Amino acid sequence: MKVFFTLDSLANAGTEKSTLDILSHFSKDVEVKVIYFYPGSDLKADYEKAGIPLCYVDLKGKRSLLTGTRRLIKMIREEKPDLIVSSIMRANFISRFAGKITGTPVVGTFVNDSYGDIRIEEMRKKKQYAKFRFFWLLDRYTSGIPVYWISNAASIARSNAKALHVQKKNSKVIYRGRETSLFPVWKPINNNGRFKFVFVGRLLQRKGLEELLQAFKSVGEKHPNIQLDIYGEGLFRKKLESLVQTLQLSDRVTLHGKVPNGWRKLYDADCFVFPSWYEGFSGSLVEAMIAGIPIIASNIPMNLEAVSNDTAVIYPVKNTNELAASMNRMIESYPSMIEMGKRARQVACERFDINMIAHQYETFLKEVVENKVDQQALI
Image (cartoon, rainbow, N blue to C red; front, side, top):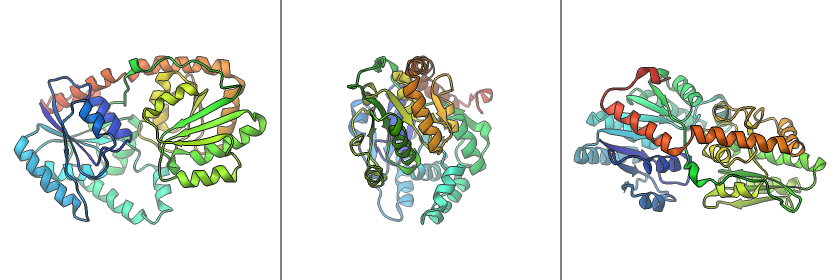
């Protein structure tokens, strides 16, 4: 079986890393090729190290979707893949058009809550809302082309199915996974008497980092010996730097920027905080669970498919006061929080090991090609 996997780029982001992890654990029964269309090659060396064939199309300009479609059609006719699996917006459109023209089955992916209420509310405040609406309508218009969908969370599948008017019953939920054997068991450390909170992820408004800084400021009034380390890069960095200055937190908050294998920084901290407004199924949250560090997470549906009140401290999304209360609880009831982290690790190792996830993915793709999909296993 030969499968094309299409991506916008090889940026160092969740879907691109997840695709790398999954394909690295496929069996030799599947011949794969990753085609990426736009600049951004942070993960190129990692894909090459894993022995995954790559093709960079190098699209630019306003007609890039048409150019990309023509080039993908040519590759399809030359190499005759059995299936195309597409992820991320522009790669989705190119793959759907090319698949439709060549008669090649396309499996779409739901990797983010692109059209959820919070996302729409956020976009309405921006100048790009008209563009957002255009691509939403184009997404909806072409959503009938994929024969099936793979979603990284059930809540993501439901939200996207509603927004795009597709059948939920055609969606297969396969969570993101990690190589659990690479993660040592997290253990409490003595940070010179300081309690260290940590965030690992992209610096975007929707990650809830403004609320995190404001909550941290409040917690510091009661527990002055605390620290917050933020690892990652993104468009929101300048805003966060300004807010750190405004809140007078420069001595206790550090924006470290992007680091390789950010999950390793979990082992230098006492608690992982994940205050996102909306997500796909977060790899960062899965990594924190596998490590076993105590977790505070917002109560968005996709987070609640990973953690529960038994494995994390959960608070209402966007609620700064409740986030601060959760951080205070973490500090003041820390022995029980450590036990909660241990339970999270056990759950994650059972549910999110990459070998199991890759097997589920590969098996489903084979079922699609062989027309043997078990409809009872879909949403």
